[in-house]
Image 1 (spheres, each protein chain N blue to C red):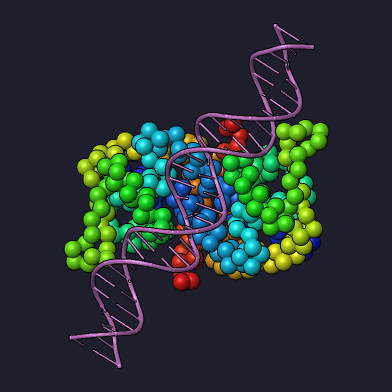
Image 2: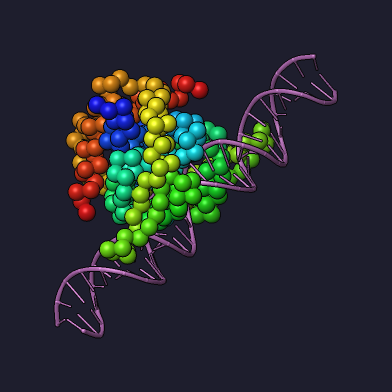
Length: 146
Length: 146
DNA sequence: TACAATTACATTGTATACAATTTATTTTCA
DNA sequence: TGAAAATAAATTGTATACAATGTAATTGTA
């Protein structure tokens, strides 16, 4: 056991997490292409399908992204006609993002995506459940710090 | 149980994986700043510390990145003096990336990074081990397809 | 109630990611 | 052996990410 063993790629949790995330996103791409969505746009739309209307701040807290990423992304979703953007008259600092009719219609087409992708994941239901628990435990640990 | 439940953010493995990966990388940043490395440059250097010399193709297979990402990244590492880049005389198509003296010296300073970051991860040793196993099982499932 | 502090979003600059294409080199095989 | 196929990097174009900064609106408070 050398003092450098901790520096081996295979001994760090961060690397498989990083690689796994990227590879899984790649498996979404062919399905999302049909919906004219990128992966980040897709998780944004998932929030919109649940919430109908959110501020940029709320959205960012839910999907862990800041305005630097969200502002241009939401403009693209607006151009595609999936959401609308307008200032909150009660507080002009806030931008209200709302699901449009086209955006709502997109939900129908998206329902099969998670199932299709899950076929590519070589984990059993139980293993996927375990992973899920561990990931959320880790995520909660991060947010607690701030 | 609606037909749309699969589309909820909380029901998809991909989202916590994506979010967790990003948040964990963020926790590396302050430590890596001291080494003048970004996260991707850091995992590249981890490969170099293990292998001393690799081709771009080998490197890409190890860390799941293509030449479109690696070419500019390796040029930056070369500018910092951590690696050298030269064509393989036996096969001029290949680019040999080699660890420089400065790059080797950097390894000393990097040894404490994994331990520091692991303190921020709210998982027990055992949980981290379980997550590790599941992530690599998933990763292997991906590569098998191709 | 002015005005400093805070908040929310937008902008800027740097660094990935990756699909698609191009270029240069090497291999294959008709 | 010589052109076609394959291979390895580099390049191009698009889309994130995020730190740092800027701007406008709102809040808190002396």
